[in-house]
Length: 416
Ligand code: NIG
Ligand code: FE
Image (tube, rainbow, N blue to C red; front, side, top):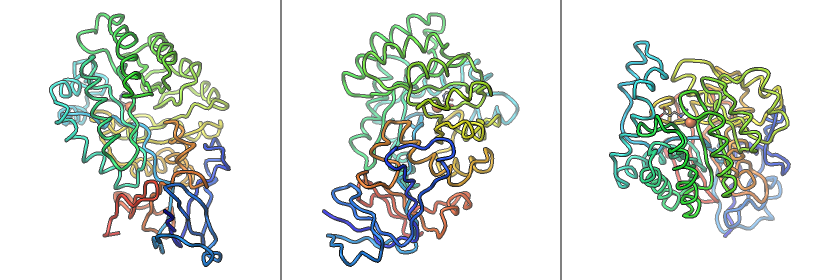
């Protein structure tokens, strides 16, 4: 089956010359084509053809993209979208001056969502997650990572991963489940860290990979959560079992997580709002992606990660929503792109690289997705705009008209 996506006003290829990621200055090399069309065969990009040669092309189907801009399908590489309950009460406390960390210390925060998840059935959690996945698809997202981390017991972590895996089978986009049992210590293990670490390393890690519920592990390295040593223990075991690694680190305090993640060659280090200046060069040559989450800084009203310094130091920078009920209740990747421009001074081109091929690298899908290159999956986000900068300029307006996964239109906004 051959489909021709014909004559868009622009194609933003994010071409990597088959390197499949962009670091430092490369983030601003956007790969812009006009007067070209894309030929897709069996879900894969077969050719990118100058319009002057189109008469030689035969296809089973033609999709007219006149006046539209084609980007690689957006990659949302860090979410906690599988949750129950609401933390609006905490939001109101924060508006009155309480801090996120105070609320967590007093039994709220992650523990409050944990309680709601433990009280919810598989079916209830599926029902809650469904519109959230659909909402990401409507923005042009074609690959979506979702973490566990709100069950924090053997039974509830597995239940949450089963919910996420339900969408891996029953959704039109690619869903990537990540095991985040090391999100925080649940109340029953607050005074017995060793026992909770044993539960993770001896029971959950082996069960989850054996049953193909996830092949990525994440942890939260923070004073109120896991120490660098504790993360090291989890990563050492996880790596032996064949997992790929991610790490929440340097969000509020810098306590050694970065070194542990780099030593274990993690796929990504996420947050980095308080990364010390002298640590930034450590990312210069590393292939670990720096995933920045400006929605958290906006939602909690504190420091933004030093995007400019990271890019100047040649890091591989990606962006994501970190969508979750407590620190970034923002299920919208376009708003994150806009915050990156306004608050972190990233250029529009850098931002596009950060939500496509670099985000794909953070979930180890960059050889298949994240750029429009021959041989890659035909995953596209098609925007109703004449210039790609309009995606950033139009705050609060969804310009996405089509979401295309492996050459199939899976979402169409007729209003655009
Ligand atoms: O990435 N930092 C830890 N985890 C999430 C917040 C989760 C929550 O507050 O529920 C984050 O910010
Ligand atoms: Fe997170």
